[in-house]
Amino acid sequence: MTTAGAGVEQHERILRQLEILITRKLDGLLHGDHQGLVPAAGTDPGEAREYAFGDDVRHMDWNLTARTTIPHVRDTIAERELETWLVVDRSPSMDFGTARCAKRDLATAAVAAFALLANRAGNRTGAVLVDPGRSAVVPARAGREPALALLHRLSSVLPAPAPTPDGGAGAGDLPAGLGVAERLARRRGLVVVVSDFLGANSWAPALRRLGGRHQLVAVEIRDPREDDLPPVGLLTLVDPETGARVEVQTSSATLRARFAEAAAAQRAETARTLRTAGARHVILSTDRDWLVDLVQAVARWRHQR
Image 1 (tube, rainbow, N blue to C red):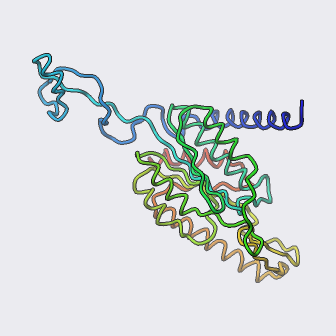
Image 2 (cartoon, rainbow, N blue to C red; image 1 turned 30 degrees about the vertical axis):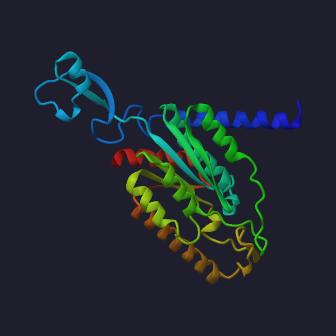
Image 3 (tube, one colour; image 1 turned 60 degrees about the vertical axis):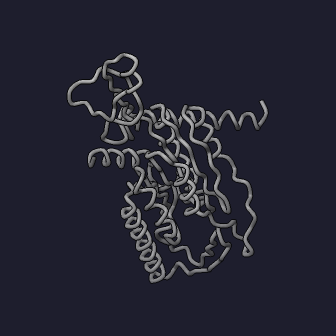
């Protein structure tokens, strides 16, 4: 077997192990197999029956009534199919990771949890991949194979983008990706946004629009070194999106305290913005068991509902 073939086989084995792990822990938690999206009778036409006193005359089946000369109404079927759209931030900042894995790997695991479970109920799942300089669309499809194909694509190596003048890889345009999802998600459904939400909250307006129409879940990906600096002496920090460099003396307790305070303020602002948009917020960190955190968050949502 060639090296490339062995790598593909190992990759598929990891994805299938991830699928088994997810379905054992989360099956039945994210949503039921037969739960309507809205508390109403639905709009899809169902079986016809004879008119009975009290039936809504707007549901009269006039063609059948004319053929049989007996008044008939047509029942409606609840809209049970849930369309899930995943907006996945693949900006260079997601390549960072100092604990068990990189943030990009954690994002792939979160996508796997929502995509695989949504497809088990026969629902359709699509994705908007926010890469530096562009957004790629994976059309919404039902079935296990499209979900696995999406995971293959997420775990593959990204094409090298054109570098910025300062040597950075370029920033991902999350607001534009959310706008694409807003145009594609025509039916009311589930929208899951997976990002580290670093930088300015320019994505807030688009997120609020999505939250006003869809059930919205925001998966925030973190790394512990983004919240506090270790005392390791002189440290060179590089912004992977712009290429900007800065040298800091981490031996200074004052500087480390200011960094931690600024990081905490940024996280609090992100949480407030997500809450204002109506999103269910879950935090996954590279130094924790992501599956335990996700199960606990989903169980908490179900209890609140």
